[in-house]
Length: 253
Picture 1: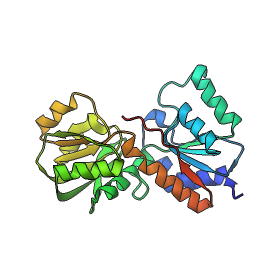
Picture 2 (picture 1 turned 90 degrees about the vertical axis):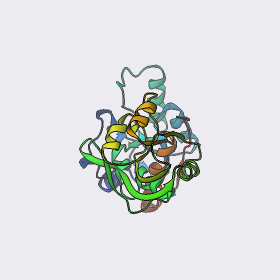
Picture 3 (picture 1 turned 180 degrees about the horizontal axis):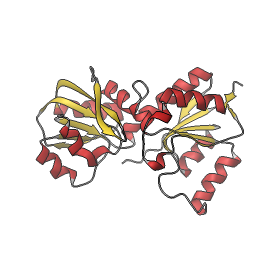
Picture 4 (picture 1 turned 30 degrees about the horizontal axis):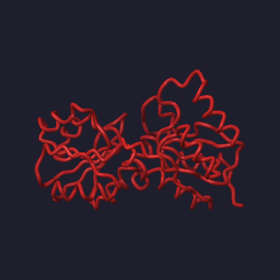
């Protein structure tokens, strides 16, 4: 059975994603979050590191989880109850956890934004949307109807988007930032886009989108961020000749 060292795989992934150079939220803790015994035989990709996905990783017989949302977003102590169960299962089943948040969002080939744009048929992309010291999204000049774009987004994610039709019926400048960027509509509008595609946003963004003259597409936080972990895991699996699988645990959000 093929295997590789955890150290070698993590070192390669950190360089590939430029983990040390990308700013992020403090709780992101990008990189290796949990070690295992030192070898990797099977990779499992998941959007979220949670008790449910750890159990799925055990079923898949994986010893490395590649995730977009890691373990440390909020205060993670004390390790009791369900938190203890999660840690216990990781250790007892020799499962390492590698997390990549904004580095994976921003990657030009394996990133959530690049891959969602490709799935939408958007081309001639340029960097867009500042966050934590770098531009993490992508934008393009094009001409596509709002209705057609909604169809493409539903096809790409497998779920119907929520559309705030605050802008023109024909989208001319589209910005894409996967995940939870809905609270930053002003940032998107300030860069001149008339249409903004992201995962989710608060209730009050409906009125704000209308005031800004902005079309907003909420494709789902989970649904817009399955692309990166799949692509990264497939890349690492090919590089190190390992099997991999995707642990689908949709939130519907």
